[in-house]
Length: 96
Image (cartoon, rainbow, N blue to C red; front, side, top):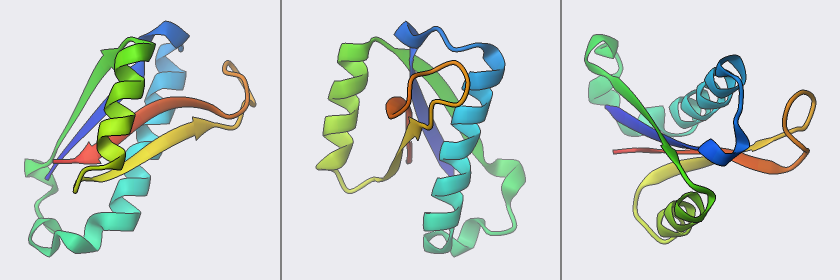
């Protein structure tokens, strides 16, 4: 299984914040959609997580594209406890 995550580089999140946001996306995708890939259940060593940055404009375009696609995807929206204002979309990820 391959999970691709795109984050908003304009937000300038710290490395720890970015890692947490990507982790939330991967956890959510795994919980929501892991059952759809039973052949991958015991093959974690073959899984890939790819993390790339996008400008805000490209991030919004990617999110809009995923909304109308057949991909299983998740948009992480921050709760605003630390570095980012509440309700800010930070990372979008999908299973490829």
